Amino acid sequence: MKITRSVKCTLRFATATKRKRLQTIMVEYARVVNLFIDRFWTQGLPKKAGLLKPVVDLPQTWFTARLRKVAAREAIDMIKSARERDGEKASKPVHKGRRMCLSSTIASLKEPKDASEFDAWLHLSSIGEDLIFDIPIRFHKRWHHWQSRGRRLESYVVTPKYVQFAFEIETGAKPESPQAVVGIDTGMNVLATRSDGAKLGENARAAVERVRRCEHGSKGQNRARRALRQLMDECARDLIQDVDCVVVEALRKLNHKTKLTRRVGKKMRRLLGAWAYRYWLGRLRMTCDANRVRFASVSPRNTSRECHVCGHAEQRNRLDRDHFRCLKCGYAGDADLNAARVILKRFLTGPYGAGCKPKVAG
Image 1 (cartoon, rainbow, N blue to C red):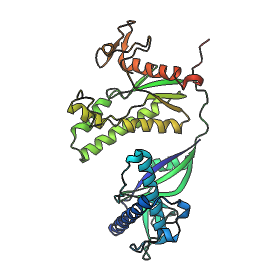
Image 2 (image 1 turned 90 degrees about the vertical axis):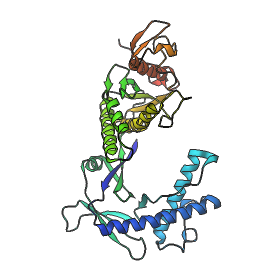
Image 3 (image 1 turned 90 degrees about the horizontal axis):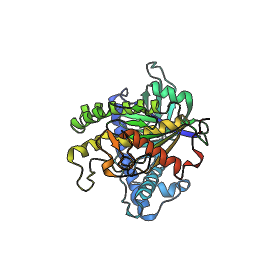
Image 4 (image 1 turned 60 degrees about the vertical axis):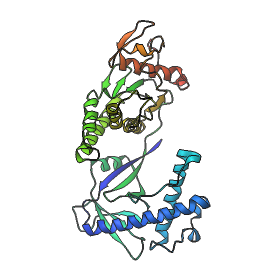
């Protein structure tokens, strides 16, 4: 199995002149991409292999044919993405000039020149008006980690603040019939509760509250978000130890706009917006893929109200935030642990469970 991972390297070592020149290119790049979007939205999407001179010829720009072709490819990808996501209700996308997706025909990574304080130079050429320049790059621990594990791809995402590189890693095949399967209950108070009783991220609520208290978009909130994501990254690494398969509930549409027929107050909606559960589930899935662990999801319906012993689901089963008691069979215990075992039970007895049942001891 092959996976792709990305690494960001800062552009703060570039001179002010180079950053200004890069910003000028990005403004023009956004304009050209939007021109192609306007054309392809009404005339139909051409094949990328058919992006020849008559298609990409735009006299309104000073870009070279190579860079116009790159912009046309990004326009095609943006239109496809919008239509796949929204179907017939899709609206025409707009490129806002925040990033450029460059291929090896425009950008390449060169060995360092005389300046030994830099690890490499990002060489940009074939832009237009004989514009050629190099941007200094310094590698970091994450770069060397993925560089040692995989192959760097010749594609680059350039923004005013960083360059994003991509690596292709061969992880090997995942186990076809995993034996060590755990259900994971994701929560705001405890980030992850495993069906075997282990709990990770028990201080998640404090990290989420810190994000909520900060002014939106402030430096303090950005620091709080980084701390929350670091906590999630560490929990994801610890969670998959000695595990062959991870099962989560497929959470969706939980954000600051959530009202649930007016049962969720403003404060709770702000907490949901700060929770970043999508980042957590995405990071957990990426960690599983990199370590040959299967990742599966089940319906989240009534996981907090259903008894994992008898299957009875009722709102009154949930006594409070931490305790669960089944009104039918009398089972009582930790609410998060019960939910994790419900998730595991749904997986093992559902459509995915035929080849994933753990071995019976003895």
